[in-house]
Image 1 (tube, helix red, strand yellow):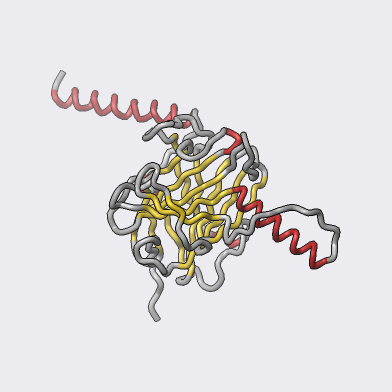
Image 2: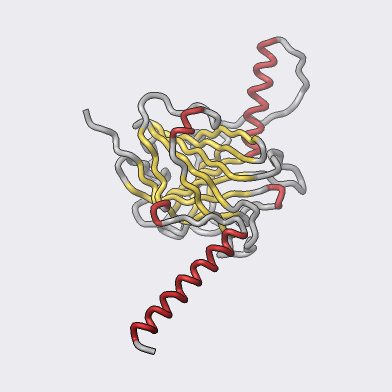
Length: 274
């Protein structure tokens, strides 16, 4: 066989392998992402940002569908998560930035009790310019994590409902509901087993809706940073990195047992100068 013939044979074999791998991934429900889809764009909009996960304004924003895989870096590994894809949209208005995260979850797990686990999703943003390990960061390369928790959202929603009932003079049942500043816990990670809750909470706000087997979760934060060392910088016109994680409580997922999407590019639209 000539050199050219061998090269064609190897190329055909490589392309055939790609087709087989793609078929296998597709059979497991794992979407394939092209190089053009590896960037998540935060679109600049004028005026108010979407007010809820159901806001019609979200339909105008092109989504990025990211493949999710199991966390297999540290024990206990979790090679078979139930969430296989995460749909991400983002917009900003020069003052605040908001993300909408959506994924398939056939059961709503928004209570945390002994023997039960909650649904959740997290956004990871590196502190500084150097990329850190996407799961929990690493020593000297820390990561800012926004962890939305379904039970925290349930607490906030139920407390709001109780307040509305009180104003309307309706019959209320007694229930102790924690007072929470947000359904999102703002954290710092510097490696496994180093996760720390930031002293100041409430900068990242969350809203969520579970409907027809799909979670729709919004997370919003001011673009400007109050803490230079402990808060991710979000600068319009800048390209940075972002990662994600999803937990399914029905599948007993918690802590490191989760689905993950490692670093992707986050492109925040620049603000036009007048």
